[in-house]
Length: 227
Image (cartoon, rainbow, N blue to C red; front, side, top):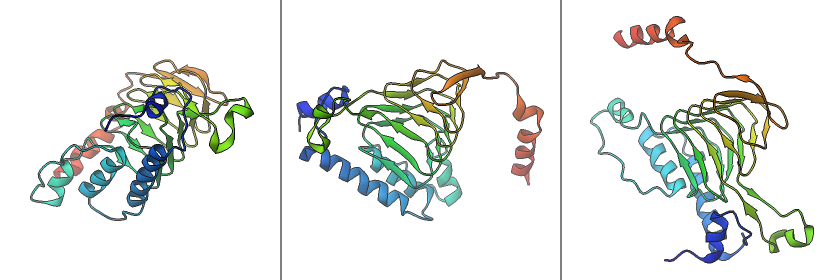
């Protein structure tokens, strides 16, 4: 079925109408999938991944089931870990990389594309808002008026602390850290630490510390595997 012009405008971030039957249906589909995910309880890792992909509208087939639960979990080691509850508008406009972790109570308004890069970590209560509304109240006009948006891109190896809010049109550069409670209104340069409302640069992110090795944490994990 061809995409409507209204939906195409939404994806481009242009003024569009969100309460058309097409877009209402799409949000309801996602809301129901999010509810299933949030209520999934102690299901297997395979089932969690299956329901998560349903939220995103990802029809990629799951790998053939392994003979043991442990081996089966290994098949999904690079899939995102997403702790429920999760709240997303459409789902189909969210793209996650490998080894992403999203802690509980994340909200993603994916009016436009939202991407989250490999190995990025989210603390609880993160909000990503790619949708926004006109400032002119006569144009805004409640549920009868148009809205708009801009893409959000969070690159690889980022860490967002608790209660961070990211606004439309923001790109957070590779390897950056956003302090808890921050509101990110502008792009964040790669490998920087920012915090505040609005978020501002505090310092460069440290690199090359090899702390996993020098602290003994990696060696401890290797010893545990041998037991």
